[in-house]
Length: 337
Image 1 (cartoon, helix red, strand yellow):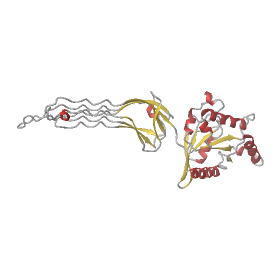
Image 2 (tube, one colour):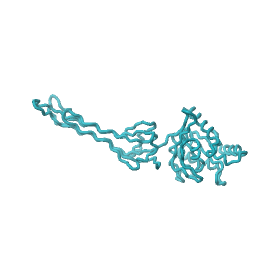
Image 3 (cartoon, one colour):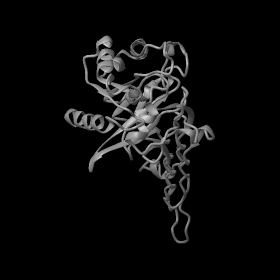
Image 4 (cartoon, rainbow, N blue to C red):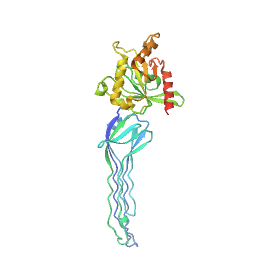
């Protein structure tokens, strides 16, 4: 399924039903008086967060959504039926904004959460409403009002506790495969991840967290190089970032320290707030280093980077160090909660 995280749609709430003009006409009841009922309200358009959805792809094929109109009133003081609400399912983490003003109308952050994006029109009044002691046969009614119509922008921001950042081919997809049931594509060439992936990491019964893997960054991403920074917004709700660095890149001329600094600079250009978020350094692919030089090599890299936070040495391919890292992440998240 193609991953879609931004769409534009049009929603139209139902119009209110018109009031009815009617007079009671029955045998033996002369001058029965007015008995025109009110119309029904128009239906609302409601967005509902659904935990079973993880993309906005369904909106690529249908962009116009209309709620039901209210029915007009009838004689015998019968009120018209209210229009049925239109309930539209969207993924959890969807941000809703009005396109004309760019104003954010709301965010759907929990399963089952609802947001009314277009209110239905009000019902019209039947002639019964206008009878009085001086006007016993009113011939006045009112039409229903029109429902709201809006052009909306839907933007999906994935909800995760931990986000992975790093260069293409740093081992992010391999890492998420090693610690969760997620199965993103992996290969020995860069840019194998084209869309974000989510994985649930279970450390122990009732102890788990969600990790998000986004396409890798390269220097100049803020200017559109590579896949750019389009998917970095999916890390905006994470509480912890893991910066994966390949300690043994295939290109022997590559400098892991320089590359790591370039990624940090791109984060800063995209969002200073995201760059300031707590970020742990994860030195990956230590299985490619000789056992007797691993510790010294990793320590040298951390010192050159000037990283003051936690540093972990792992091999996502063999699983070495992954369990200890996940346990530390779980403890950290629980302390934050």
